[in-house]
Length: 199
Image (spheres, helix red, strand yellow):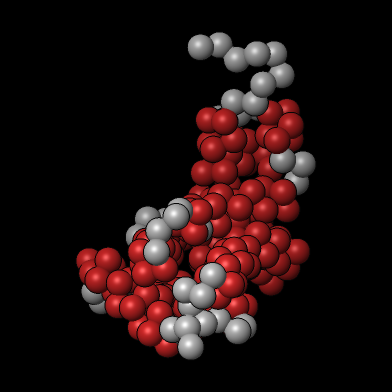
């Protein structure tokens, strides 16, 4: 099916973001827009039509990650099911795939381009926390959980789910029990729900 004139090809946007992920991991803030375009196999004009700067690329990368991790919060399941799925998504992103290179790339970017690092945090992990907090507040309102401070509870749950996974991934250290993510996620959700049971 052909695209209408002026219609954005989502495959090119994804190729750009994939290329940027690789280059930020390899070069940190030294990665250039020209290199991103070359790695993605698109023209510079195509790149700039979608993203005006590396800051915009960083924001888009973070948004893509946040959308993937928080997808379970948009389901209609019970709290145990939703929190288990959320924990699985969080752990899968950190433990498997390109997470190590991405985290190391972000660590490289941070001192040289704090604006990019802040945008990536705000649009990625920060946005995920805000969405989890909003979901927890709704569960509190409905009487399914007792969460007087949803922002704090969102951080607690994320910390419980991840443990030292971020640090292990950043340092390239093996993850013990990486093949037991579903079980770990279920246990995290179960204990969190017990701690935040409604009065």
